[in-house]
Length: 204
Image (cartoon, rainbow, N blue to C red):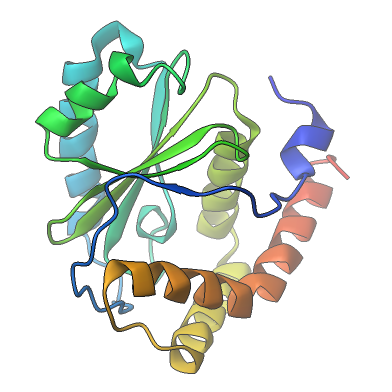
């Protein structure tokens, strides 16, 4: 289990290796909550579980589409834990068989691998190692927003404001730049909620 210090430490930007990232012309948007999002996650979780078998240590629905009542970009975010993210031969071909594209690798961020499925709704699958603090953070944030409507609305307002202030059009290299700008605009609210959440959990 990660330590409180590991869980509460915010990630600094590091190296990004572009693997299969390519332009798609995707236009970023925020939609009202859709009851099909959790059903789509359940379908994907079953498929990922089947192809990874015993190599799958954990899987969870994270991000805004996992929070009931929260407007979101129509992207299903999934966290997956494997024994060793660096051992790509153990899981990349299996995920590619489902239609996932290995998009980027971030060695400095817990050896994170991002996979994308370019369907509607899109799917972003994040691969981490066992007992990764980032997966704990994602779960805590999801559960906190689910059970705290005032912070859920605060976060929804921050998302709408961020989208209004940046350009979400362009190819996926542009969209990656958009994602960084979008996250930067909403970051103060996100950090405020994280601080409140960590203090309530006794981690700070």
